[in-house]
Image (cartoon, rainbow, N blue to C red; front, side, top):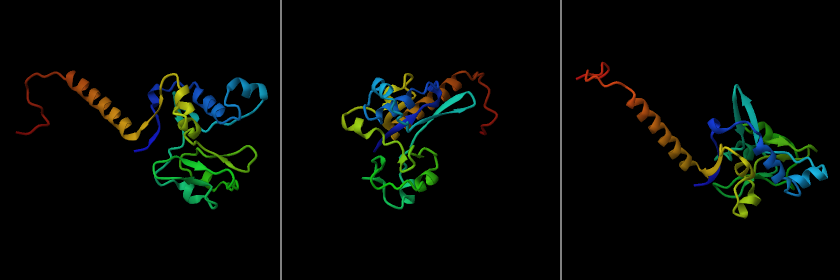
Length: 183
């Protein structure tokens, strides 16, 4: 099973560290100080959106059946193999925006020159070096994790079970039968 960036909204404090780390990871120098000195303006591929009092990091879901891949007329938006990240071949991309329009999450954007698109590649260069995606590594609250989806689901089930057990423990047991239970 493939790994992906999982978001725990309850832990996100909206600091935007993930956006900065992503932009730096996709810069030419890969170092914040160098990026700032050179005046380079790299763009991030994860967006922290505000929803009420919550901050929600929104990133590419690398869908199993990606609409962006199906919409791309040149094959620039592609996946090498099942479970792999959805990538953009910048040499083949013509900047037509079909993938931008097809993405249900709104996470693919046009490049600043309008000749291509930008989207999360799960920091494939970092993964090749045994590192986590930059957004995950930079998150101070660990709201972002790079794990297998089933592992994330197991953790959610455990948390749900704990909440249910805790709620049950606070229900008084008077010995009277539950009115919802029939003999």
